[in-house]
Each structure stands twice: as structure tokens, then as C-alpha cells.
Image (cartoon, rainbow, N blue to C red; front, side, top):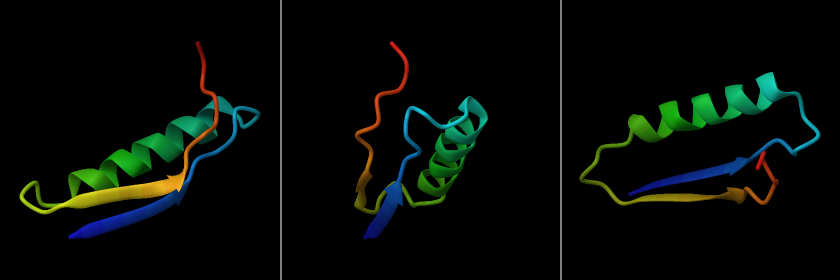
Length: 50
């Protein structure tokens, strides 16, 4: 089992900071074996784009 806890940057943050966060998060998730249960928890309620 993998548990990932994170806090996303807010919409007011620089686009580079937001991109870096999601790139790093994706990298961490990709390191988790696919056969394992992975739980992502965090403060992800920032409004991004649209």
C-alpha cells in the first residue's frame, strides 16, 4: 500500500510552480508499483485554469 499526502499550490501561484508540483506528483505516483493500492490525499481544491 502506498499513501501519498500533498498540498497543491493555489491558483495564485506562478504557473511554473504549479507545473513543477504536478510533474513531481506524477513522478512519485509512477514509482508506486501498479499492483499496489495507492491512496492520494491532500489539499487539492485549488482551481486551476478553465
